[in-house]
Image (cartoon, rainbow, N blue to C red; front, side):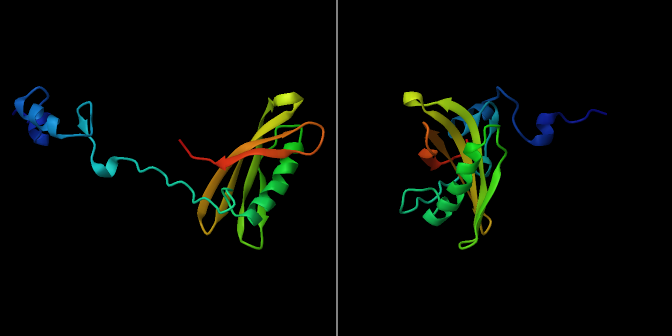
Length: 147
């Protein structure tokens, strides 16, 4: 007893046949021999809505996150993520001081990553803070987009 071939079972023409060549020219989203359906195409994550103040999160929440960020930046060791919360708005998250980098004019700088969560919605931000001898100052802050 002979079993049907894969091509017969799937009702698809084998590669190199005339039927396959005709259909391939119609398909705009083809990779190799596998056609991608529109449902399989990953949707881009929407960018967070910009705040009127240009921050990735509202000013009051940024103030709460920044206070904890300054603590994290001051730690000489590799700092774990530190939690922050704004009881007034219900937003909370974490901030993490990352790698050290040399800044301009002898400054010490550190990159950081932060999160903000409210009502199940999550926003991430990253940036850089620097200092010479005085307190840390945030010199870059932007919404973080996952790649």
